[in-house]
Image (cartoon, rainbow, N blue to C red; front, side, top):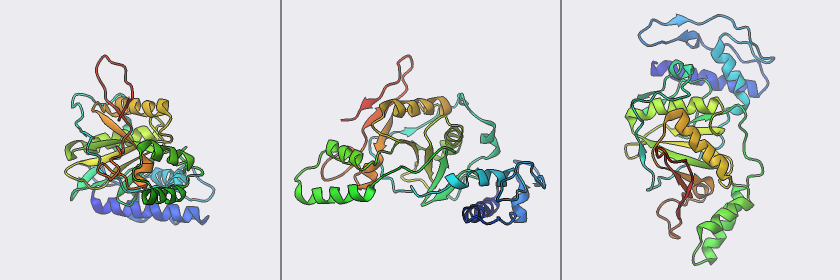
Amino acid sequence: MDPEIARIRREAYLSHKRQHDEGTKPKPYPEVELIDIEDDAEPKKAASSASWACGRCTFLNDRERDACEMCDNANADRAVDLGSDDDSETFVPNPSSNGANKKANTNQYKCYISGDVIYDPHPRSTESGGWIWARNRTSSSPKNEDVHGMTVTFKAWVGIKSKITRDEVLQLAKQHNVTFGKWLLYLKPDYICETWQKIRDAVYDGQLGDVAKIATTAERGSYVICIYCKDFGDRDDVLRVRNGLWGAAQVKAKLFFKPDCFTHLGIYANNPNKIRPTIYSCEVIEGVEMTLTDVK
């Protein structure tokens, strides 16, 4: 897809979302938004009307309908910086595997890289703070999450404690309901688009966690994908999502799981307290049941 058309589509989508959130009737998308671009094909007009409709919106095509359905879930208020973790491997997919759960919309909304920046034209994907986000329709912001309170307490500890342990940080996070965490996946440019599409679509189809995100630019030659779980203490759910990565995208490499509390507190691989910011690892070994390994 032409980058300019992708940009206009994104601007139109965000404008539609803002108007929908404000309770006003969104204006029709610009004319270019009604053009569908296919590989090696001439541009063609989309349908001029759609049978599905929202009480607040008038739709010209399916893309506008999808945008409306995602209005309540498209907020990108969880964009946070992610530090690199030295333990993580760069994943190289199995080229002979197409993915057990590959969906048709993977081909319909192909990601692409232009000038080292990755673009995702899927109408349900949103971009914020250098990340592209994929959210399941059932996703919601964490309730009673008190990042500020956790941060204040941690800073007080730094001033009075000679050493802070990882268990203390994890317990502090639980006390303040900061329980989100993510599997970290690093990919080279040759594999990033196809793998992200599979993970993105698996999130939309409810096969993984509620949220995943990908950095729009590479760091040290690799792009990072984060696949979220709601509670780092729920080992069954963390393992379920790891299994889902294998089923959806054949992610076989050894991955590490990092609770969000370490990101919020600025605890990365090299920190004064020598805290390991990842707590689990997991890899696919043929003939061996997948399990979580505690990172010491």
